[in-house]
Image (tube, rainbow, N blue to C red):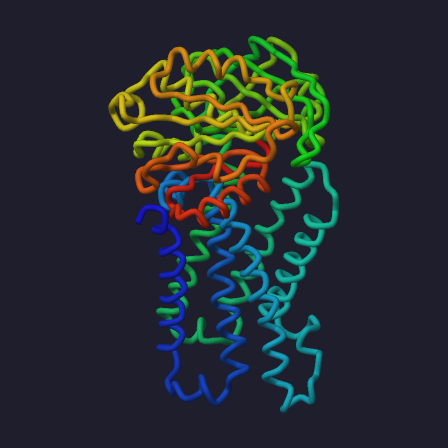
Length: 447
């Protein structure tokens, strides 16, 4: 139930909106008699509900994570909800044109500004959304500009709120529907204000400094298109340390020359609360500047986030698959289990619970953490380690993962790595009979 509780909230909000819409009609037959008007109004209402939810999902509130199962799942859903909201809102004026076509001869003047402020702001909000989306998809923006431009979605939300509340419509005429939409818009607006103005001030934050830096230079990987260089940071707390579970991630703001200070997410590769370990792949305009970080630079840490650890000790057989930099949350999980074995589920791993770990790399040179993982097999009971090199061993498949599994129902597979690898393996695992809830992802490509 936990996996679906958040999605049910969204579904219920849509159903409640639909119910209030139908109740606002003194004559329900008009819903059928005037289909274009019905589609016009419903696309506006339901699109607005989903647009408000897109802000709520992006808020990073703790209860959102609990309801939706982790920020990686939330962001995937956020993208889908945002696209659907934009599609419905874009359809709204088109349905309106179709509704008025018999009366106005297809007059496109309905789409032009002038005459009514509420209508004009609705059109402006849709235009702002379109410009932002086009810029994000086709603009090839630097990360800091990518973040800044998304802030203007708040302007589209403000225009949309004014439009839907003050234009002549069922929302204005039927107070239960009006107050319901006000509630949803208020939640979306509060979420936007919290994310953009208050998150850095009110969320849990901790102060660290860079204690050690290690660089790993490798030849380029061709299989999944991953960048080659990885840089490790060990961070020392300057005050109260971050309390976290293995497998979680946090947002890091580096106060370093040449780097912008907006927070970036990285998995925690350690279970030790006194020293935070990061392993960062250089794969973008911002991460490519990480070599400029110096020992002694200050770092602000926000979080922690993520629920990748939730079912780590739930199953008798755990299969862990790491591809490339996807190794980092597993390093945190294994380190936490080594240091604090009762952290997960309140008890240590029993003798009949096993971890079969697969580290997928192109070749031995890319297997940066191979020696560390081999050493862990000497200290962690039940851990079996497999290094899978695609150049010599071929691609990792579900058949290889499940070769030693005697009971699928008591097995879970944890995946973190390139999206292509996770998608391929998940498809194969389901074809072998595994349920979706037994396949657990950590899906942040920028970890």
